Image (cartoon, rainbow, N blue to C red; front, side, top):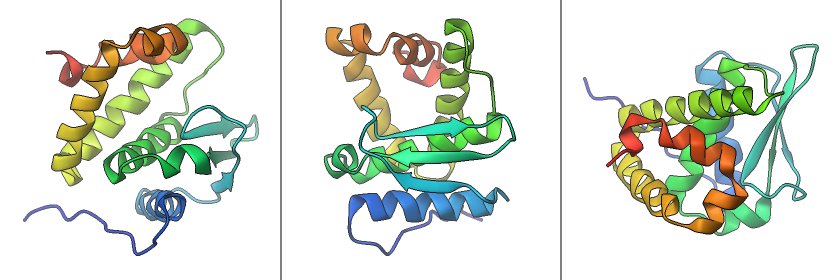
Length: 153
């Protein structure tokens, strides 16, 4: 039996992000995760975790508006990876491990449910590896993504 991908019904990209996140969070049995609009961050979305075990996802409408659907789906799985893995994020080494695990989760989910998006995302990541700006501005993500076997040529 073929795995079926979920197709959201919303029209805007940020509504798509929220609907997809809520669908997959529910599918994984994750409850009480707030998905909040917050344009102060310089990324598509970030996960905030609190000491009481609660977390929320902050998404940037302006960044999401410029993304293709495949990137939005990948971002949903990446943030879900952070929530599910719940790894510490204090030191550089912990940050690299957390980003690696979150992106690894996204890769597995994309390959399983959205294989065409996995190929698009892989091309995008491989292209970004060559961008000095990305390497300089996002060294944690760069180091983490370099360790993912699917992103190696």
